Image (cartoon, rainbow, N blue to C red; front, side):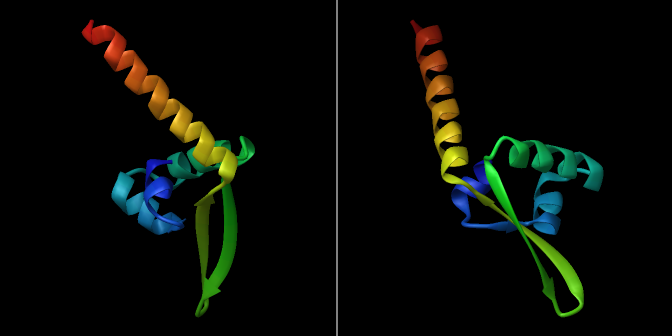
Length: 80
């Protein structure tokens, strides 16, 4: 999600390259995010090659921001 928060959209192969994960592992995680309504998928062709792009939804952005806020509060509370 952090990649999609910093980029309007990202394609499968770029995700795989930057995260250094297998196709199956990445597909599983992306499917879970899609099932939660956190990302949307767009399948296109570039020339003759299929390309799958992912984009964070409004709900996904809200959930990620809430997650970051939770982590920040957790860190702050442990510093006391």
